[in-house]
Image (cartoon, rainbow, N blue to C red):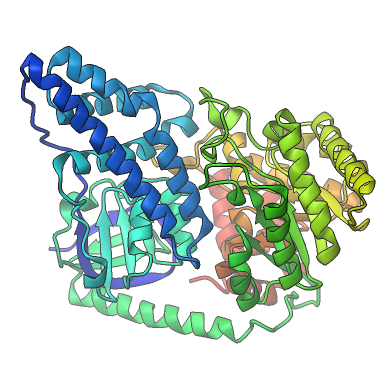
Length: 579
């Protein structure tokens, strides 16, 4: 009998293959009592499992392939940091002593308590971090048990393998990075959770937040993964299988056709040029930028240079990374975001504690201004590298004009220091503001006299506008990029920037979604930045768009406050190209 499951679509098209189950369960943990003299040895056994887990994660971090997405290292670094938290590494020891129980039972009690605490938190962003905590605890269980994680051998996977798991951790992704498999599905995760980000970076068909797939799917069962519609079909009948085989062929043909427009100009049917840029995490991504024919780098997430390491990168290390990217991009522009650390991107060496609401705490430009010496080291490295290419620098998570002025003052200090040392830097560096917070969007007019460009970070803008954690699958259905309030903030920013002669780009997930390309064009956007894998699909949509023809529909969309009506109008806007 066929079973159809619905989850969150991560993309990557369609896959048809055989299920390979990943067993990562902490159910049915045994409980037994200890004699008083057995307690020290049990605590030692627990400590050894902690050490083994740390060694395992650090070894995996050190073996990340060079061509792997930078996110892998960042998320592994987060798990190593969590392993050192007292609630995981120390408090189970106290339970063992107090209750005279085995380490597995103590860890289970602590795990249940932590999950209950996370579930009780009203702040969605922090509540989603329970998945990271559970992934770390599962690895400790494995080492206590003395068995491997029951992952299928990477060498045993075949090209049509569909990985099925309750969750996939960054460590699992490292394990499978060099394997041949067609798709993966998980029971948990949100649209921009760590699992989703890794799925998109691997450009694989994937669906997450299915809730019961791990229970319903059997090993080697035929499975269809529709990464476009968010659908998983177990044991499809011949009619459905034939239909999806046709869709799979069509999807592969479409990908081949897209490659033919790599060198074609990105301009609309009426001749309006559009800049399509790429987002990167480091110099290793430049090959992908060149391969998609992007017009430059619209977002270099510099914080990935700071993650997955035990110490702050030196000025020279940062300079070399920035210089490499600028030189490889030649005369094309490179926009580097200053370190957007904090929240769930906290390196091991950063000792600011854990905030109650990380997404609302010391993050982005707030952290930079709170650590001016660290910030100025980065600014010095950026300015030194500016002589090697066309550099643009932007500041993340700005909230007010005061923060922007403080950031620019740090730039002036850095310039003065370099002048005194005789270090060359370019005078042509442009500085911009990221609009990610509703307050910044509403007062964006005050920024215009102080900056050269604006970049809208739609991922966080949507999250903060709608008060929805983009990582939490329980509210992921409410994460709506075309919510009327979100569209009005984007429109307001584009209008004021254009009126003030300041270029505006979008660098969040909306920029890489072809279904939203025409809407953004109709709103006046002329600069997009996205994952390299999405550039050609967006370019095709740009080339199939006539601005005069989409104007009436986009105007109607922007005038309505009815979300359902906006969805209907969006379908009409894309009717001739999407099916």
